[in-house]
Image (cartoon, rainbow, N blue to C red; front, side, top):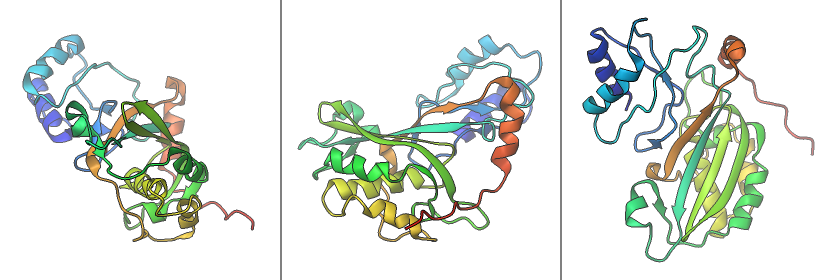
Length: 244
């Protein structure tokens, strides 16, 4: 997405454009609520650029709106939280054809109560190293605000996941761990026990990419953008362990 959009914008404004996105997704992950910023000419025709981009972009990439933002805005570092949804079909016939592109067909039990019991113990600020692909020098401390399974009807479930930020493969790893609980392969306390790991756990199966969608990004009011960006850039340390 980033590459084709950068190319289209550069063509429109007749100069190279650098694009910064709110959330970098794994290959195969979808986004319906992605936010990005770029430095464009001051006299750009924002309303006219939207249909022009629609003619240039492939069918699976669309820009819904364009607007000027304060100089302090940074699509990545000014974000307060990101929201993801992971869809799972638990029907015997698999995912509905029109939803199969963004829904995992899960031919196993998925006990929602057990998965939500396990998810509740993962909320808050923790070191999610067990659920993240290691990157040298990067922190794996994150504040998980929401992790909840909801029934969508028609045999479909969704994991609704929100955090201030996510590590690479973190959401898919959390989903994989919770599906193991829902299947009865792991007890509900197992996902939280992995928070004691200091490296990615080989016991966690990463859920396939196509079931995951970035659905939204939250930002503070304009007068809080710069402060939020500065706070986000600071390296976070792991919180102290809970007392036994």
